[in-house]
Image (tube, rainbow, N blue to C red; front, top):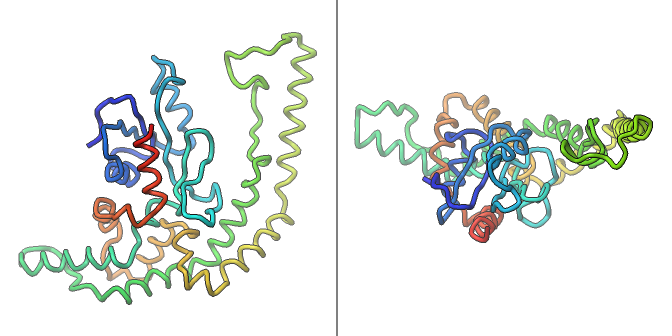
Length: 285
C-alpha cells in the first residue's frame, strides 16, 4: 500500500476504501503518498490544509478524479486536464473502466469455480452466461439510459463554458491575504460592482434555449450507429448510472457492488491509454 511519505503526492476522491484509491494502488509503481480527499469540490481546501505546515509550491503532487460531466471526452484517449495539477479520467468515472464484459465473465467464472471446490460457499448464481450475453446486458442498460444521459449532458453543457462557472467571489485580488492596491471604499465598491456584473452576465447565459440546443446536439450524437457499434456509451454515459440500471434490469444476476471491488484490483491498466498516461505522470513527478 502506498502510504509512506515520499515527497510525491496524489490526491483522489473518496476514502481509503474508495475505488479511486484502490485503482491508484494498482497504478503506482514507486513510493507515492495517496491521499483520499473526500468530495471533488473540496480538493483545494483539503490540499491547502494537507500542506499547511510547508510551502505548497515546492510539493510534487497531482489530483486525479472522475471526469463526470465536467468536460467532454476528447477524440484521443487521454487524460483531460481541468486545471493545473488536476487530471480527469477519459471515461466518465472509475466504474466505466470496470464494467467490462470480459472482467465480469472472469469474476463470475471464478466465483462459480470456488463454489465447485467448496460446497459451503454461498455463491448462488451458477456459472457465467458468457461474454456475449454480458455484453448485451451492459448495452441494454445503456440504451435504457440514453434519454436520461442526453438530459444530463445537456444540463452539463450549460456549465462547460468557463464563463458560466463563475461564482460570486468576495474579493477580486485572487484570494485572502492578497490585498488590493486601493483600500478606499469607493474603489473597493467599484471593483465589487464589476464582479457582480460578470456574475450576472454568466448566469444570464443559462437559458432554456441553450438547453434545448444542447439537447438536440446530444440526441443526434447518441442516436448514431457508430456510437453504439464502438461502445462509446462506455465513455460518455456515467458508469454509476449504467451499473445501477444493469442491476435493476437483472436483479437475479451477480451483485455488481461486489464485482467492482474485485475488478478494481484485477483490471489491466495497459488496456487503457489514459490510465497508463497517469502512471507515467506519477513516475515523472
